[in-house]
Each structure stands twice: as structure tokens, then as C-alpha cells.
Image 1 (cartoon, rainbow, N blue to C red):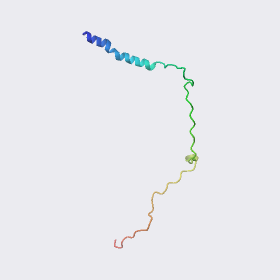
Image 2: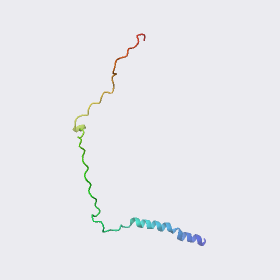
Image 3: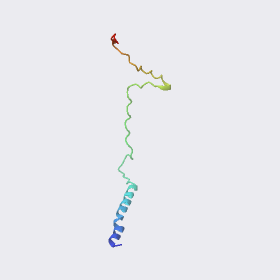
Image 4: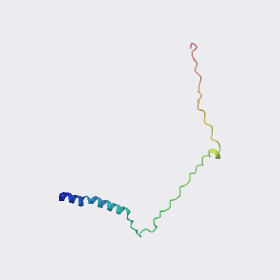
Length: 88
């Protein structure tokens, strides 16, 4: 094994390992506590959303009226009836 390969194995290939360890250390360390925050991290409460003014729909099911019957699905023809010729 020549010297260049030995230097490559011992030094250069350790750089990604050191970078990964630094990344993990940075991710798990505790954040700095700053005394500038006066509210302790609480958020300002929002205004409650107003209820709509329209009335509620009637209740269905066991606690209300039964559902309305379905409309007829067959349409009746409107207008005058056509006559067939007498020869047919």
C-alpha cells in the first residue's frame, strides 16, 4: 500500500464522518435560553369566530321529522298530443 492511499484512507475519508457527527450534535443540542422573551412563549388568543346568522337545518333521523318523500322521476308530456296518420 503506498503512502497516498494510506493518507486518503486515514484523513480524507474521515471528513464526511466528522461532518455527520457535527450535524447530529447540532441537531440534538439544547437551544439557547434567551431572556428577551417577556411572554414566556404564549401566543395571543384569537377572537372567536362568529356564528352564522342563518337558521339551522331541521334535524333528520330518530330525533326529528322523517325525510321528505322523493319527487316523481317520470315526467309527463306537456302540450297537445300528435295524431298518427290513418293509414298506419
